[in-house]
Amino acid sequence: MSKKIPIKKFSLRILIFSVVMAGLTALFQWLAPAYASPALPFIVLFFFVITLFTIFIVLRDDQGKDGQRFVSSYMLSRIVKLFSCLIFLLIYILVNREDAWKFGFAFIIIYFIYSIYEVIVLKKESDDISKKSQNQEEKTDTPK
Image 1 (spheres, rainbow, N blue to C red):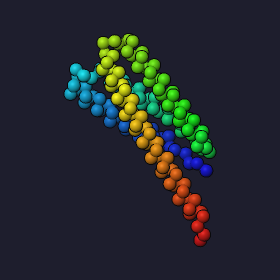
Image 2: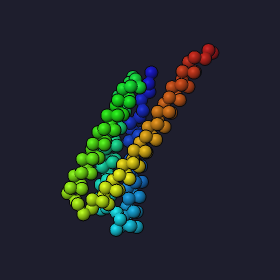
Image 3: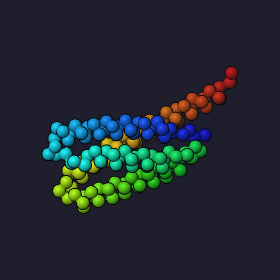
Image 4: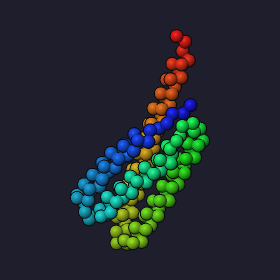
């Protein structure tokens, strides 16, 4: 029996992470305004929303999902996120060509930061659930 990874817990974590990222981007804009895109806060907001959406795809109703369905959902979320990012990036660059390089560079860095964070949190959560499940199985297998 698989356990459910809590969406609320992950949502809170990504909210806190996004607030920290927003603070760091604001600090960067203040310290190095010549190198910072004015759209940095919108990049963080975009990644907050798209990460919540893609994680919802992965974690929704995973009770009873086998490993293959989880992997399929995760891969679907990666594809949705990648195409959403490419569309967002392309639209911004076409509309605002004078900020294209700064925006593109910041966007890619923030993309990788969010992706790494997401993988680490999902892996940790999955390991914790596996460990709890294994402990419960050991408790039920030991005779009293």
